[in-house]
Length: 268
Image 1 (tube, rainbow, N blue to C red):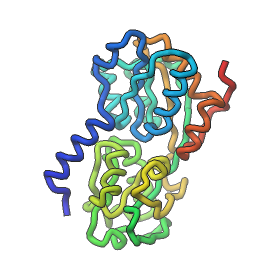
Image 2 (tube, rainbow, N blue to C red):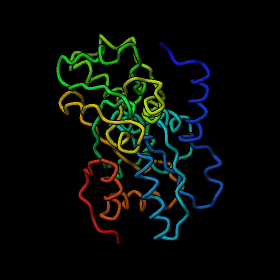
Image 3 (cartoon, helix red, strand yellow):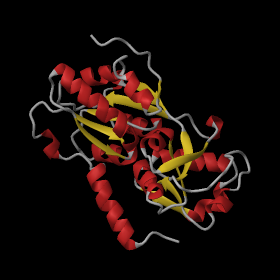
């Protein structure tokens, strides 16, 4: 069963509000820091940005959340951004090859996991392991994932399903979303029977539950790199990136389920 056109239109409108791409209007306030960040970072990064602005007296960063692939393409087309935080290495490598970041600022900031989720009231039970029967568990429903060719969570999910021998049985039942938060929303609203998202997304949404966690060796390591952009206009870009590596920022990331990969330092 596919999603109805009405549902697709509603979802598109909701996502435009939740993770709208950055525009030149984001620079309307003088000195505003513009951050392009993977959609899965929203809860943690919103909290960190609010605390940083309060503590420093600097303007609240303007953060645009979307799929890393979409943000990278926007940067390539000239969209203004001072800092980019990707959900995988490939899209950071992409903007680096295009000369769009300051290579000496690049850092592998966070790690994550992917999980199989179901609506909160679902009775689905499944052991995520080699040979598991995901198609049967769907029971005719859809599997929500980020776009498997572009969105990092979708790419990780497809790789894991291929490694575990489940992809062929479900590839025609996948509801591909424009980013991982969109896939999460499909499951939370009962539009999809199951979904594959980051563990951090599942933790942020009370209307889903985790059915199982994918083995770490079933997909490439999930790493979130960050870097200041080559044409950054805000003087806050590097200080904010440095703040993301501090002991003060660490709890917000860990509360959402991220693994902090950098050695945390005390804020100056």
